Amino acid sequence: MKNYQGFFSKASILLLVFLAGCKGGYNGQLLGELNRPRWNPITPYGMVFIPSGVLHIGPSDQDVNYSYQARAKQVSIVGFYMDDTEITNNEYRQFINYVRDSVAHKILGHVESTDDGEVIDWKKDIDWGNKGKGGEGESSLEEIYLPKEERVWGQKELDLRKLKYDYEWFDYKAASLTKNRGKSRTSFIRKESCYVYPDTLVWVRDFTYSYNEPMTRNYFHHPAFDDYPVVGVTWHQATAFCYWRTRLWMDYRTPRGEPLMDIFRLPTEHEWEYAARGGKKLAPYPWGGPYVRNTKGCILANFKPGRGNYPEDGGFYTVRADAYWPNDYGLYCMAGNVAEWTSSAFYENSYSFIHDLNPDIRYDAEKNEPEAMKRKVIRGGSWKDIGYYIETGTRHWEYADSAKSYIGFRCITTFLGRDITDN
Image (cartoon, rainbow, N blue to C red):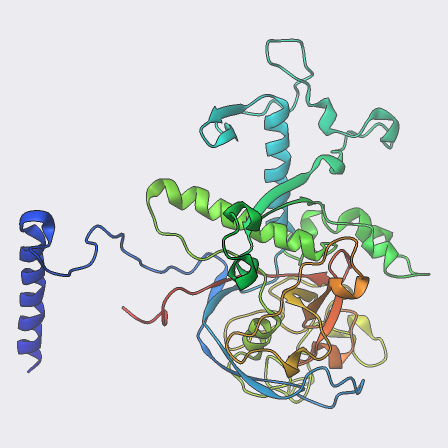
C-alpha cells in the first residue's frame, strides 16, 4: 500500500508540473501563485522554540501580599521563539556599537541619496583618528567624544548623549479601530528616538548606604561581565533594541530574497509565564518545585536566600546568563538573576478582562500622562528578591522610563506556521 501511495504522490507532482508548463502557466486551473519563495523556518541563533499550548495563569502559591492581582484563568498561547538567556552585556554592546558607528558615518559624510532618502554607506571605513584636516567633505569626529572640560584625567570617552537610535513602527491596534477607518496610513506610523546606553549609575542609585561603585565602573565595560545580563536599560531601550534587531535581520535577508520572520519583540507577560513554566502546568518554579533547593541542598536560582545570604546561591549580584540548569524548554534563569521587561501594561485587575486567546494588554503612555499609566509588567524576580518574587506566577511592575540594576530583558518572535515539526 505504501508503494502505491508513493506512486500516486509522484504522479500528482508530475501532473502539477505539466499544468504549470502549459500556456499561461495555469492551463485554466486554480493552482495558486507559482512563483512563491519556499519557507523553511529556522531557529534564530541563541533562541529556542516554544510550542503552542495552554497556560493556567494565576498564583502558584500563597498570595503573600493579598493583592489579588493574579486570578486563576486558562489561556491559549501561540508558539514562538525565545532567547534562551537574557540579553547579555556583549549582545547589547553590538547594538551600542551599531549606533556609535552610524553616528560616526553621518559625521564623516558617509551617506548616499536614494529614492528612499539618505542611507549610510557602511562599506566605508571609519577613521577614528580623524581630526578634521579640512579636506573636502571631511569633518572631525571630535564631536562624538566628551568635551575636554568634562574628561577625567584627560581620558577620551564617547559622549553618550550622542548615541540615540531612531526607529518607527506601525500601530496596528489604532488602525484597526472603527473610528479610525478612512484615515491616512501615515496617521498610524509612530516614530521614536531613544538614548541607547545603559544607565550604569543604577548600581549606586538603587542602594543607599551601600558600596557598589565598582559595579558602576566595570559591569557594562569589563570583559569579566560580557556574558552577564545587561541591566540599567529602560523599557523604551529594550523595545528599541528589539526594533534594531529586527532591522538587522531584515537588512541581511531582504537582499537575498529570503522570506522574513515576524519582528523581534518583548514577550507579553503571559507568553513569558508560559515559557517560564517549561511545560509544567501549575508549577511554582521553572524547575517544578515546590522548593528552591534540590535534594542535595543546592539552590536552583540566583535570588536572595534566607534573610539575606546573597552569596549562598553562588553569586553576589548577577551571574552568567546561562548559569543554573535550564527549564524543560531550554531557557536559562527564568527565575532570578534579573527580572525581565514584558510588553504588557500593568493593571491590577487585568486578569478579569483579558482575552483567553493570546492575551495582550498594551498602552503606550505619553510623557504628560499620569505615572500610573506608565507601568509595565516585569516577571521572574531578580538576584535581590526573595523566593516569592521568582515564582512563575508572581506579577510585579516598574515604570517604563525607569532603569534598575536588577531588570533586564530577552526577546521573542512569533512562529509562523503550526508547529516546527511540520514538514
